[in-house]
Length: 406
Image (tube, rainbow, N blue to C red; front, side, top):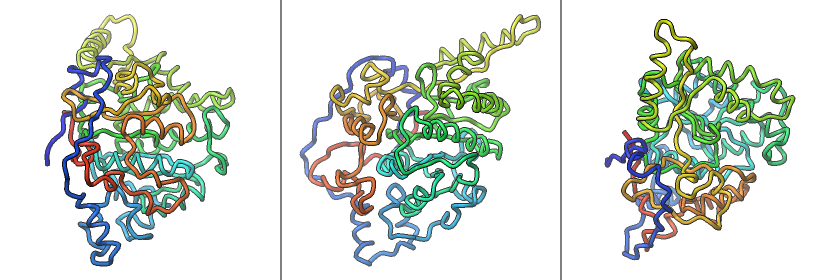
């Protein structure tokens, strides 16, 4: 399998530049149909069985296209967190069993599918769990043949879900504060945790290898997406004492923050600015780690600040604004195969609502599902966009295996 570059090794080449991304030009050469599509059609025709392990592996990035209630290794574990973790955490980061945690509400079904498609097919992550907190979302998750966990027993209070929880509403704040509580529970069990929002789409880089390289420096507590100063929608932490301390500090702010109407990222940002340093490049981290080591020497006046690495905001780097994903009119398709491309994912922030967020990903060519795919329509409509364009190469990344930034 071809190995992709990591977004770390390439960062010094291009990630700091503000060049507008290269616009893709369609290649009109004839291409063969995707063999996964042929397999799916054979499955539908009855000439292949969903019990075939090769079939399950080939369709791992689109499990919702398998027959309903297909028997999978994690089937029936929606109320067994330890069982799910043992089954799903089959990849590692820095020697720790690792799991990606995706919190999901039924209003965001298409966003979840697009996220999982790119996470599995392009970023090479199969070690994930989808977490729900209400009955309707759990049912939607199970219908998609996903590894689902019902977190409702962990809720301090019931969260209403008949309406989409929009930014800064009471339901939104309850949900986002619930997430770090569950993540900390998994960290305490000894797992490395990668949390991803559903409004994120991934590039063809081996994500776990890349995150492993990010935390390779001694003294790095965790990796967060860069914002002002960090974003709480995409991060990775190893189950270390330093990461435990970060979560203890963060969660200690929960009750007063909720009472004041502050969401989890508000409080995390205040915490980071008060007691943490951040770094964005190898050289930046090396300088700060050296200064940190000096400050721990005998006679140092103040205790050193712990250090967090930040992954770049792709929209900020390529389009000049953290919020560019919410402005589709200023976007153009990006080519993740161009030399020096070093952005592992795109995260749409600054806008609320699934449709507006999806528009941002569509604007850069990171929406991978058919237009007929909808939040409450038939799952059979949610086929890969690549399948409907067999005559042209619309995006070269459709045919790429996951590669690593090492």
